[in-house]
Length: 331
Image (cartoon, rainbow, N blue to C red; front, side, top):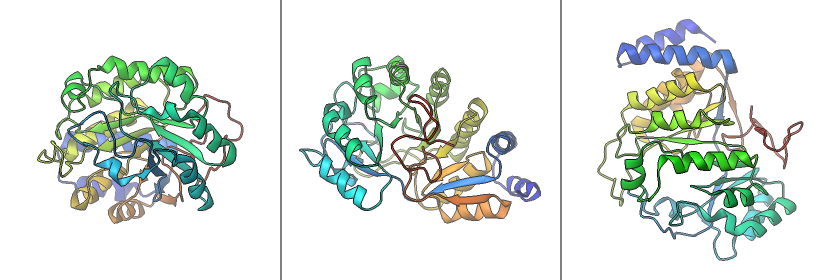
């Protein structure tokens, strides 16, 4: 690691001194925690929608758009899809889908099929859970290796963007129920969900602080064509960096930049800033990410066919030496 080159990159950034200082502090903390390694996950788990393109909500930022880009695991297709993925040497599968009116993703309705997949294959099973109650969390605990939970910290965003009759407390309750049943948590903080503006993300971190996540994943809002939010602006880079540096300060666990983030020049700039701000892993890195890491002398490790929530190279139903409820497979 070449700290002189790191400092030169920070000094050359077109941003304010407060942001630069926060980036320096977060990066030094990241080096203390995780050393010189920077993990790149170029092939995340394949997402499968358990509801096809159907969703009971019409979230302003999505409106089922992202469901159309997932494999369709509805109507009895899930088991055959999982077996097909397993034959391609996939390490895991990401279960997702449209939300029910209560805000949950109905993974729990497919418990028999998913348990059969766990018995018949070595696939790790991650899932977008949405908001869940205690009973739903108990069902998920029978087969889920990692819960990917969006944590929203603002009631207005929950009501106006997601269209849910829910509150921040419901997200806190979800984290409580999932962790109570020993399901490892990979919470997602969505920066700019409220039409590109920072609103509730720091509150979400405070909620998350009450629990013991295995990893924290930073998602960045994308104004998506055909949705009610398509004309919203991109989140300010400084806003994303504020959330990254706050997260690095608050948590001693791996911190990842999600594959869900805007593309083009914005992505190239963001990836550079994120690495300089203490991100220690990244899904689907840009060329800019490689250049930034290499220029500083970081040891870039490419992790094949793996979600950024799991350990480098780990494949199996249960991580060696770990009991249920621990952060299995996480560095």
